Length: 263
Figure 1 (cartoon, rainbow, N blue to C red):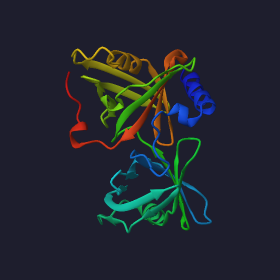
Figure 2 (figure 1 turned 135 degrees about the horizontal axis):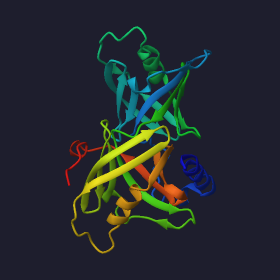
Figure 3 (figure 1 turned 135 degrees about the vertical axis):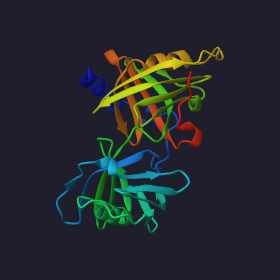
């Protein structure tokens, strides 16, 4: 089932024009504000190095031009500009805690500061490249608000919410899930194992939404999700039995969106 769901995503993304698949696409100048985790790096003219614990080395390109950085045991920041595949990062400021002997913080920060271009590969990775070498980063589910953009079924019919910001997901680090479904809120849990993803929005408020609301459908479809992939920083959730694909885009969270509301 998981393989079939992933295959369906691949078929839909390969056969649909991107503008058709994404009614309100992000601009080419933006790097989505997901948390990007370091999976590998290669210094100039050196073999690639795989990173055993990617979550220890992260970057998040925030919409206000700020760059949030976690370099193993140190945290820091910088400013950046990104446009048409080019990238410029200001001098990086970090704390100065002594990290473990196996830390890859130094090459991570050197390569990050020197990065001058960015692109997304076919596996959903973000590649940052510069004269010092290349960083390969994967997107994380957590630390952003995922805003629903559309549902595309296996027969290519499309459902698009009138107000995408009213249909959102927040994945918390402890396996909890916060859902906004139009005028209702829900809490639940999620489990993820590689591409496999299952959601359970068990507790939901029961407010009466407007007649055109997609609240019930949104929550129902979330319960049918079985796998996920990323493309260009967007999140695609595949429903079981090839029922369709839900597409989400990342938004930087407001402070009060990090904690789910009890239903």
